Amino acid sequence: MTQPVKILFVDDDPLVLQGLRRALYRQHKNWNMVFAEDADTAFAILNEEPADVIVSDLRMPGMDGMQFLERVAGLWPSAVRIILTGQTEREALLRSIGPAPQFLSKPCSAEKLEDVISRSIRLRNAIQDPDFLERIGGMKSIPSPPDLYTRLMEAIRNDKTPIGAVGKIVSEDVSFSARLLQIANSPIFALPITISDASHAVRLLGIDTVRGLALNYGLLSSVKGMDLGGLPIEELWFESVQCGAVTRHIAMNMRASTDVVNESALAGMLHGIGQVLLAMNDPRRHRAARAAAKAGQLQLCEAEKRLFGFNHSLAGGYLLQLWGLPEAIVEGVIGWPYPSKLGDMPAKATTADYIHIARLAMKLDQKGSDLLYDPDDLIDLDADLERMAIFGANTELPKWIRNCPHLGHGTA
Image (tube, rainbow, N blue to C red; front, side, top):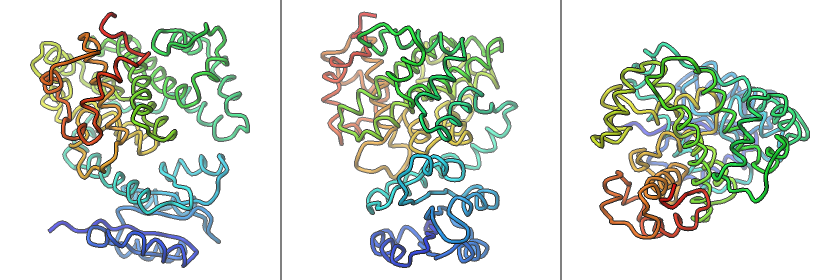
């Protein structure tokens, strides 16, 4: 029999803990929930038996939540760490990204908390699979976050005017500025004016889009000159940017919240980053996987799984988790090829669903299928039909393609 997932809640307010106990009671058969009013009590519980998920308040007397989770990260690195905070200051929230990539604002609904914890458990099961960890651990090269991205994140965390600080950093990087302007003025974003200034591009595209571009650009620049088995870097770059834009369009049409739209767009932009990781470690094998996909023998992810033991979506999600990106981004990158395979999915759309639908839209658009398509087209593309039907996406997709300014409607 499978052991219930152990979840530790830490908060100095006993009324908050009582409220959590009551609100999450319906999960008592699936989750072994324990509660602590301070860090010392929490450490005693963890020393007796580690927890799978730890949810901590940010403001506590003595050792605060961030300090507590920093120690937890060193002692129990496999535990999922989540911050609950009543603080609304942007700096306070971003400060917690290091020890806890996931944070939630108080008051937090039971439904939201359940969603976040369930997602964390799904990701933990996917990324910490022993077979996957053994295989990816055998790779000779796992890149660090690009320096440009690191500098941007420092500016976002520490500067009182992050848009201006990001614009300054971008403007000082001549190579990235040129690439940013190229993208901002491309048909992908379909902006109504010509952009000639990098800082202006940052303001129009937004910080999330720029940091996604910086991650992609930084990684692709770092492998320039390496043998990648013929991986089409330029094609991958534009496909990633387009996927982010189309994912944003899909999420907005499906009436996602602003936060989810932004998360989904960023995850869409990063959805193919794992291809670089596979190609830089075994260019010959990844070339073979791409050849099988191009010949129509298999979808790329399936070809990679047969040759590597895992696909680029899982590799990409693993890499982004190492780099400290939020779990919603990581789940989108891991789960987009077929969201249902993530496991116990909620009845509402996730970042993985939005990217999955966006990728289908891009492929159908390339075939000129913006108005009507044969249902077999979706089957051939390995669409997650049962999952899509929950949101009506299989019937609404032609309209979303037709109304999307980021697609060429089969004419490109």
